[in-house]
Image (cartoon, rainbow, N blue to C red; front, side, top):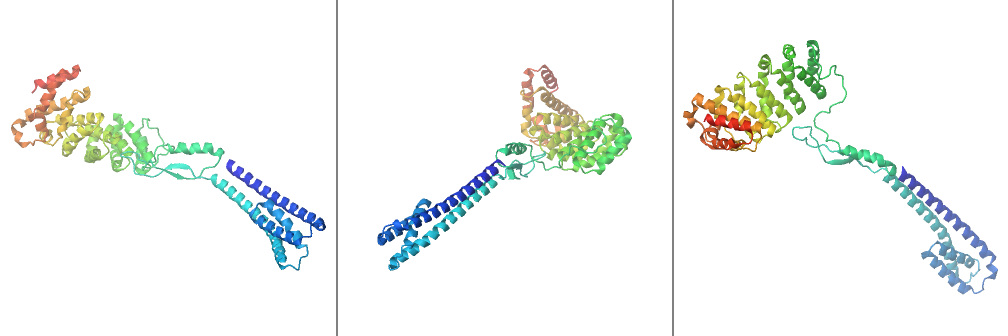
Length: 453
């Protein structure tokens, strides 16, 4: 409102000043008229010279300012009243001079109107300056990989109050532009009607209510809270049985198909806690292939991938369902090479479960693996990774001996795990180099492996 008020004051001042100038001009012109009438008898009788000077004065008044126009006009009136009818040139000059006198009034009015228009234009400009659009919002864009997405290209929308008084609102608008990008997933509401807290230990009737809510709702926020509640309760053995008996495993597992990575993560966590129970594993095995496929194709090192790997690790602790995942061995080793520190540790735990089952040895050592996998036998890795990769090598080496696969070396290609671990001799050299490792636990593990070669 500050600039608008200032523009209005300027416009009002200009209009009042223009009006005052016009009134002064009218009063001065009338006064000159009266003075010329009273001094008419005292003027010189040289009408020809007066006529010439009058015409020159009138001409000068056209190009000069308003003050000159007043003087020129005052000379025209006496010329008209001198009575020189016998001279046509003088008559024409007098007539033109009288018209010029009327033109001055019209010019003054035009000047007044021009000043008024300029003032209105300034006022309009000030008003426009006060309504410059300036709030910043985030334009919709492609979602970020595996997350809530968001774009980062600012666009202008809305309006802001102009002037100095709009400083606070401008600051608020800028602060809004620094918030996280809008997600492609449904917005989580802060308040909703959910009957329990996520850390409540529920009885069977209460678990039934939560399962009913989860089955009927499409609200992702309520789904997330219900899954977390069920997952926390599934950490207790008595509730693991209760959820299975209430038919909760299919209700939870149907959310594996959702596109929201947060919902999939919470679903895997709930199923992971339920899979500790052997009877629940019999229910979850129906979805294990779907979980494995989603875990391999989702964003690398994401929370969804880690949750899926934990579920697969729990499902392969026993030998009952390992054969359902044998087709994914090449993907496991590729993920072992590409993943970060935590992904490497989790995928090695999963592969070690397969190496502890001699029946899975042939399928395991015949799969293709990246040659860069040998870099894991490097002393630069920390203790946990080195202990896991040494355990994996030890188990595979023992199984090859026990199953008599050493004599069947022609069956395996040069890109297979069998050739990398057994035939190339590179792994043995790398393991021997770890014998001087600074960590005593790693050194003991290396010596144990070397004694079995």
